[in-house]
Image: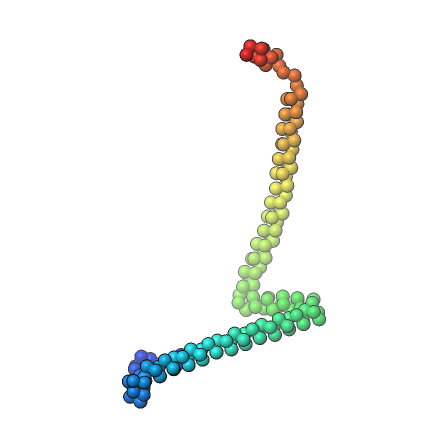
Length: 152
């Protein structure tokens, strides 16, 4: 925090021991630690509050821009994203991701079509099986089955 080394801290401790005295030093150390904790907590709260206000202002500006002219707002956001990707060198990754997304859409469409075909095939197979079962029930028993039935 203050960029102090071990030797500086020892020197500071010795000076505090001489100036304050050995009896009051622990009490003073507790008070100083308490004050530092309070200061740290206060700065953290202040930082959080400032961050929250910044987000609220950004959101309000975005909403205002969007409500006044949504088309220009969308174009501006797209431009910001592209500029950021150019700066970070991820534009090529973006293009690759776009290609992969397009491939995934095509793959999804073919998968859906395959699933529809499989469902239709399953339906036709079930229908054919039902027709065979109905025909089997309608056909008269064969003579062999009749003879077996008489023997038992």
